[in-house]
Length: 477
Image 1 (spheres, rainbow, N blue to C red):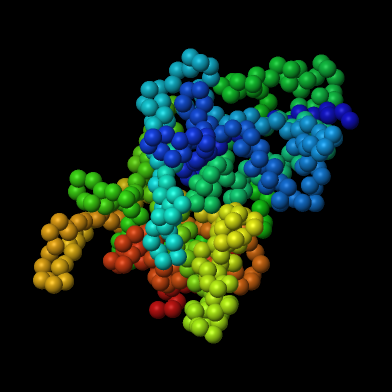
Image 2 (cartoon, one colour):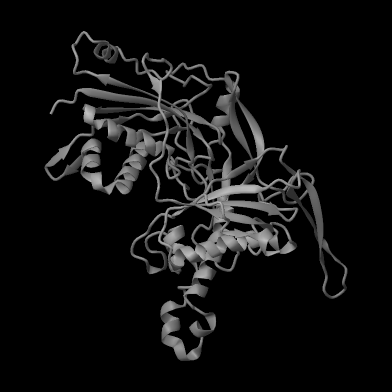
């Protein structure tokens, strides 16, 4: 079989959220470190890109699984095929057009310092009672690459003229909401947008004196060199099976997504994180208020378990009644956590959790959110003191305070989209939709200090771009 065409694309990806492609290593200060190149700059290995891409294509297009198997290659016993698709590693751009190539690359000192000392995210596992789970490493942290960081990589497909459709399908997957790289992709990490995509098809079937043939022979593999003949490619996603929920929420004044420690003004303060911005030949950094997707996901998970139990009539009084001792012994844990069918199906779980034989990744997808100081202010301080219940006076050493966040403009809304890789319109999806309605009703606070009145949001939710809201708080008032 003669492969007469070479399809080549160069893609620049920009991190829409924080990114964590783990190296499998740890340090004295961080539990998990990101993958870095020889200069100490973050990178994405080609194997990571290939694995995500192959998995997406085979899942979304099972009818052509044989074709994808042949394109990506396979090994079965003594038979197999080599891959026809080559994907390079993705390297960080140190300015709008340049990567650090060679051992003596000139990297600005401020950029090198920022990226060799990346920020970290702290996580804590919350149990069904709403408190920290101290069992089995419930507290951990990891490095994270700044939102806004750009990476460039290259794809090359060896094929025929008939492979153009498959080539278009490959490129379309990079625009999918499901295209995420690294760990924590269901906790808000790893969302990458296409900043630029250029391609060229070399037709080698023509005469050896043709321009395509000679240009391919003289192709320069350096990412710092712009080869002739590359043109922008339209970017379309093939994902039509995702259920999309858009929420527009307004806070009841104050909210706080805590950093876990304070500053010289308060004992606790909102979490902030720097983002990278490419401007005028360099990278600038701007500190933003962060709303982590993991905080929202945890609240949604617990409330989904509640509604699923309600809809399937799993009542606590029946479960714990003495006459149903056998049922209690078998199912006492099936109401919460990954033992709950709705939580496991939508939010995923590891193999072995609650005696489940197989694990699966979550199907609820949302991003981290960043707000500038022109949108969100963090200067409001609340002071508290613990009261001695016997004397009615203040306890010594019990004075503490926290900073909270608020939108500077009262009409500002907190808008975000939740993608659900699940579309069965069954009890599980119904439980999830009831959870989103609770959020819009103000019955599901988000963030910290919710028992003090913070984090209450009201608003509306739309499903699959319908003009009519699935629920609108204003219509119920």
